[in-house]
Image 1 (spheres, rainbow, N blue to C red):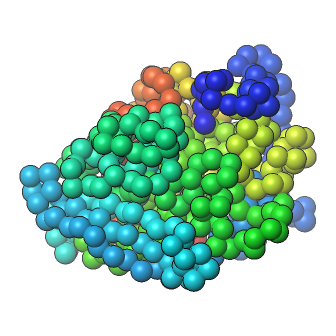
Image 2: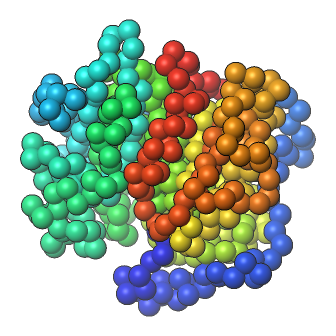
Length: 452
């Protein structure tokens, strides 16, 4: 949520939104949590200590203070509801799949969520050269993401502000309204598959959505939520991992090069999903802002205290109270990105997206890059990747180094990559071209994504 319309919120939410600071001179001093200082005061001296001690305790802190505990995996049943080997005039194979969860159905019957996945695989691939893939959640439903009459209308609850939505349900007028965010032919012609589903299939994006969410399958009726219990972002991330379960069984996809992408609140989700699930080979965060790639200790734009009061259900209950005093808050978002190390991460900002704090997103990339550098991802130790920052001189191969924001529309292709493009809060064709270039550089065919 960035650049919100005040009229969309309650008086209480509006009061919180009016607290946002957009004056850089009023940011004030802040101290970021040290990625290399363990909770017992000891210092991380080796990669083994990072992966064996510091990374697990950081992950636990994010569960306890921000997103809530991960939901357990469930066995699933996959039903292919439609498939065409000649989609887009033969460019791709289109497959529509419904994932259902028998264990959840035992508890909730027909009310148990079903995930409606759509997958496009380029027909140019071969068994010897399976395709890499992007997986992401959509805001509009599959029928809006692509201009394809073979895709049925979503039947799930939708936000009233989305185009073609009437009484919180998609209509025929919603078809193709979100295609600018999914340049499908470009993605396929670059050799990538694309998998997506509507995030509302996992949990509707409103305060009472938990009752229709997969979370309801794990929580006892009438029992108050515990401080560390999962919020909606964790539920959406859970859904991405369940789709990953399915994609790993598709022989036309390269299991070493399937990554996760997301815009805005779904960019927050993409980062958390990659931190939770090491099978994701890369992560793309587009305009994710607070709770995503922007630093929470910086008092600029959205802050964690503001956001966790306006969108309480996105986070765990403790987040709202603990974020009232950021001087005592034990984590920040550079430590989230650092948990994904050494897998590639790209952070996209937009010049007019003040609420998401592009400067805070860039500083996050700088700070997370220090962990990648500690793990050996620098030019000296990775000569084969030394050209990843060849268009700008403020980066090592680990991440950007300069405290100054790069010029507009100048991507930094280091292991933790960054770009601030000109424009507003959105994901555009320009963003996608940059993201494709980034993954091409870091995960070329035949290269395995490093995992802890």
